[in-house]
Length: 163
Length: 164
Image 1 (cartoon, rainbow over the protein chains, first blue to last red):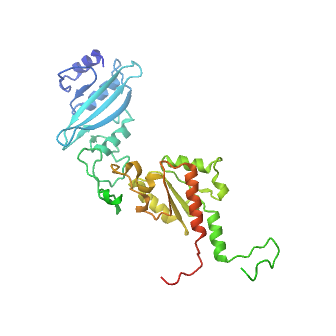
Image 2: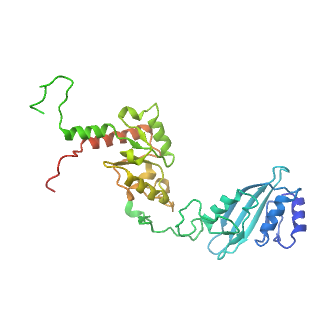
Image 3: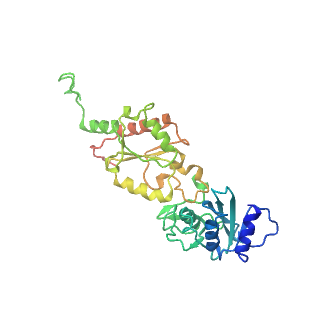
């Protein structure tokens, strides 16, 4: 991330950017509140022109810590890229959806929701994408416990008896 | 067939209907064509020209209602496990199941930590032949299919079971 992008963003959204101790230039951490406006700004401003959302990643930092969402943006025109990180509360993880800005975010956000239970507010079709609809729990969270049965199918946990 | 044997010309074979039925079943077990993971690639290789499943009378059918054998080729997730069970129930009797590869046999590499993987397809449907391997080579699958044919050939579908 170049310094220019950071300056443009700091001027446009002075309160949304979380101050960092070391600005290594790899990523930018923002608060979840204004994310939709920032994303629209990143997409529509001609000198930024982030037309490609390459990836959305969910991160769980452990049962005592927070959840996190990361967005990897890239501009086909200017050939620059940017990583946005949003730290979320573990109890009520909610972040505005950017599915209306980058259509590819539709399935990305559904997958992050499926695995981490992070709710993307404003998403028009937020369902599980890989797991069955009646699945209980968020499997990639660190404190997830494998269910013992699924529709009467036993999922053996203790493996010693089987070997 | 002591009495009737060799009474007719050479192109008439006399056999008991029981043996004939199991022989006919064993030599044309049509398999249900669906692949779940990488084992399906080996199953396709087995069906293709080099190994050629049709020379032992097996051909793929796309509908469970026309199939006799279900080759569970690959990782069965819990979500798919319910569907595998339903597909098995839709097949007409007599029906057989082959668990191909370590995933279908026991969960394979997902044995310990795969929260979404069925730990062996025999938890859902009865399995006739297990083919080990990850994935099994086409020769191994052929061996398993020949074992299944042998099993079918020893069945006596019309003989009433007495005693136990």
